[in-house]
Image (cartoon, rainbow, N blue to C red):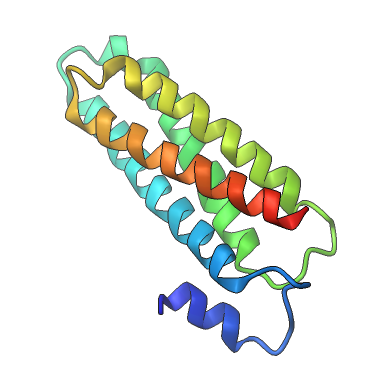
Length: 134
């Protein structure tokens, strides 16, 4: 059992019928993606042709921020503002955009290939959870 799942299950509140394992899996994918995007942006900055990677760096950083925010919001038990579905959709969009940008560079930069894969996994996890929410 992951720490995210243990935390979700340990809370006295409920998730409104949402499977805590699905939420924990999405939290984990978001955090993994945020780390990959941050590391990819840093690796892009170390490349000799940094100017050609500007869009990739910006997309990486945007995606990392959205993923971190999504993980934090999903870690809360209540959705009083009703933003979870919208945030999951935004996270999907950010991950899709980042994956597409990284895939342009993946052949020459291994870090972009790894990042694109993390983004696709996170996009899928967000989509699955969003669909589960109904």
